[in-house]
Length: 213
Image 1: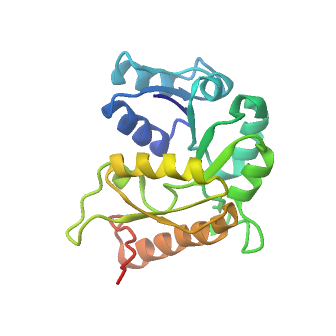
Image 2: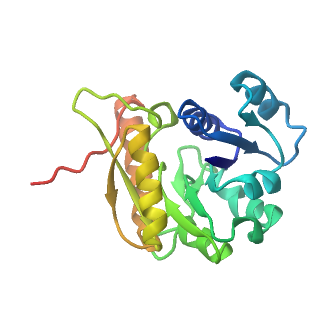
Image 3: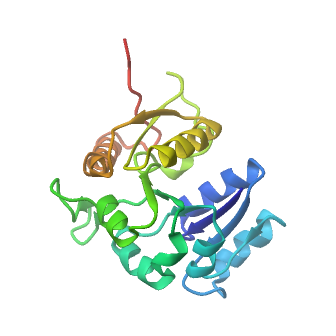
């Protein structure tokens, strides 16, 4: 499968490496095809990796992953162009984090979410919130003593959620579906719960698991 990733940070590189390990082709897009960080990643990753612009990566991907800084995401979507995402599953791994006062807070509250804003910006795409409630180090093949963790997802399109669930399972995750894209409000808040635990206990090695009876 062809995967387009928008964003060259830790999340983008980790997810890109995971897709490559599973045999997919990956384009990691940035503002410029001349981005040296992205080009260095592609050279190291091998022949199935490349580093074009945001627009090129969005057009290339059968599935597109948003791994951009939350505050920059809506502008980046405008740069890439909504038509490049038409009919595609878009995995939204972003969080609306505000670092202006030091420790992060959310700049979108519980009556809206960045996930919903992304879906509105890409009306022809099928946005699924995922990968936003764990640190990048554990996104691919997570290993915890207590067993396999769960990734919570939200999105309006059942077919897209089935596709993302399959990807998550190949990445080593269980899946917990919260329903429509408005569930992003709670997933983005879950990110803050993950961050709060990290600051309190001085560790970034934790994940969520839903216990069922």
